[in-house]
Length: 466
Length: 85
Image 1 (spheres, rainbow over the protein chains, first blue to last red):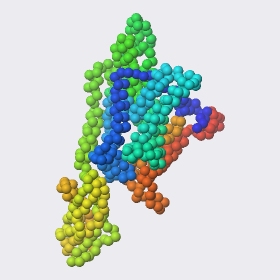
Image 2: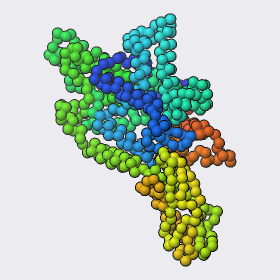
Image 3: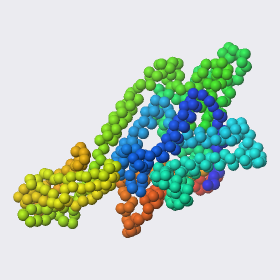
Image 4: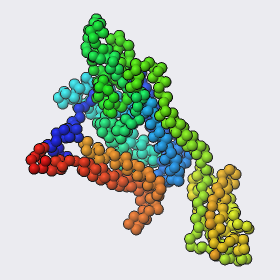
């Protein structure tokens, strides 16, 4: 798209030229935690699809069969309610964590952060740390540069393909998929989605990186509303740090009227989104705490106390609270309300899962025949029963009907349904003419498992007498 | 680049939501497409569904972007161009 020369201020913010960010490697408490999250989340992502369960993949979203398997649970399209509740739980958890500790999700668990972290790690292995990378990018194209760049992109692409393959392995059983890859018999759509996810990973983690957080992430835009003055965020202690400036080790900087910030710029160099935390809380800050680790390293070196940049709250900074006072202010009405609501939904969800029936029955009146008179002055209605066996074992069920005197099923009352299958049966119900009133009568179907008395369904239906 | 991102990404998210809601309620194998039963393999039906949702949502995002442009950018005129101010 060509940039019109019009309105330079708008044009500048819309078509901002991106300065490549070379985040400097950092070590420390938060960096360790971030790596633990990278390893943890990815061990689950890359590993879970290989885990067997009951002779099938433990976690499989089988689109073809319209069934989602998650360990011992099987979800049918009718269970979309659970998915909705799960999404609500995720949203509420995000609200709660954000209100307490800022963008913890972004800093540690978001796939964008996690994959960027992994890709940067590869980049450092091959191209060296920040300064070496900057030098390499400035260097003219030569054998060394080409070799390193090629190696980096090859490893990135390799990792991306594995990621794409794993992703599709949650929708097509991964063993089948591996076999198809080896025998080159992948389906067209499988190839499409593997490549799609691979290139999304490669593009997002290799090229776009912080731009995804800055320009694409909806959460970054509204996370501010979950913040309040008692939210823990990565904060620069202005009162302690300012006025910043370089100094000699021998100087008494306090006597010189200087603060603790030596203005080394490490906090900016380690920042994956390239911001200066000393300017205050910004929406670009993903709360990764790299600047805390970086600053602490410098404070140790110059012999000042750690924590010039630290997790703190607006209130604590203003009132010069210690840890204890700050933590007591974390419990506030907003947090209590979020926690209570979240707790109630989680309990309801767990209860619902625990009581999820393995049997479902839909009763549909046969539209072809309304009601007819049969022998012995009886009225017959025909119903279609859709019996869904949601369990993973075949089941035998017995059907009965009640609600009108002498009501009975004419025909077999037992039905066998294979594991995780729906079976549709036609059931003729007969009632002596005198016992039903004219018009609509309410009746009930009871379907009960023969192996487990507790598995039963009581379903209402309408019996018509002309 | 950024204008592509702001069009494609929100529409991708919304297409994901639309896909989830639509296909959890409707089984593609029970649909009729132009009077014919949909007999594609399930993965094809879901994929085409997703891409169609994405295309539609992208169109919406693109329209939003297009309408968000100011008059001068639309007219491709330099700033402070006399009569069009």
